[in-house]
Image 1 (cartoon, rainbow, N blue to C red):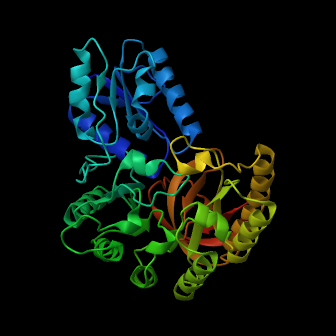
Image 2: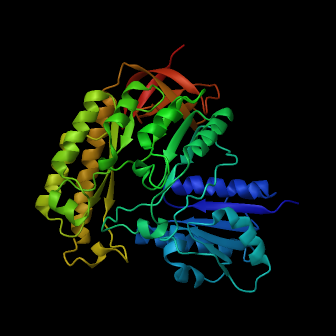
Image 3: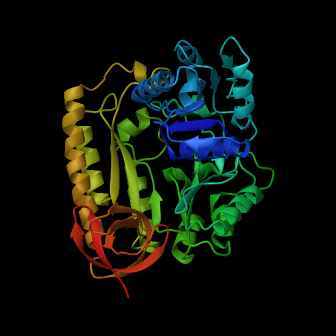
Length: 436
């Protein structure tokens, strides 16, 4: 009888990719994948440490696994494991801890733990690690959208962020290996491929042959059978004219860019160690929209960073309003142990963070509606993701420019590309009718 392994993944899209890759390693060694709520022989918790809440959630999931089956092997991996191995090892019931490298050895480490009277600590120094660890998806049970990891690490060292210490320096995956994985995924029926990593705009760093993200996108976009290529988050300074041109001219490349703003105040941006000014960000967005008028530009904003006054928040609010992002992810700043910003003296009160966040979230909903409403009456293609209401046969999917669309059909549409006509706005989503 096959042993069972269960995964729980916290945090970013890169973590999701890595969990899928590790799950594939287990499956190819004869394990059966089950849900985290089921009894398993091995539990793998892929942790997040981007905030202290990520740390806490990671610890909760570890304890939940131990409680679910005290006899199981509990494996803790990911960013929290990398930055705080001592804290993880203090949790009773942890059998294996492996950080953000050597995860292709995960089954081997489990087998070692089965024979070891003490936990197996496989965490190694990440800051001196220069090689990209190629761990492609061996298989994937989802047939709608696949993530492909193209690089690892970050060297920006924003003052609020612990991730460079969790992921190490910039390393890029060989283009031919990426293309081979994309071809394999397309052959298995995936409709959309999403390029992911920690700092994908820096793609090419560490490779002998000079290549950048635009070069890679152009090569991937011409993969036979690929319907959509979507890009993960890209830093403002990494947006190049060639990349924008590729989005404008190659139909396969989705009209969507996620570009983190973080603050609309120049003083706060300097304190964050973000190397651009607000006028440069606005000018960049205008240039992109000049080439791709229907593009969705989404962003991240941190509220309540140390030193943020009422006036600097208003600058952020007005910039978000003026730019009119199609979606703004609003995060309340929380001090991250080990980062410079955690020691800044002028911390913002929780009450101010709450009030400012609520205002920006309200503005975001207005911006989402304005952007989505522009497409009422138009025809477009939707990649259907899931059935959301069995009784009414209502399905949900995404346009290439990242608008959520609801449509009705009594046919099984998951993973299908469907031509629809947009009828009306419902909340921040669009209602559509399938074109006959």
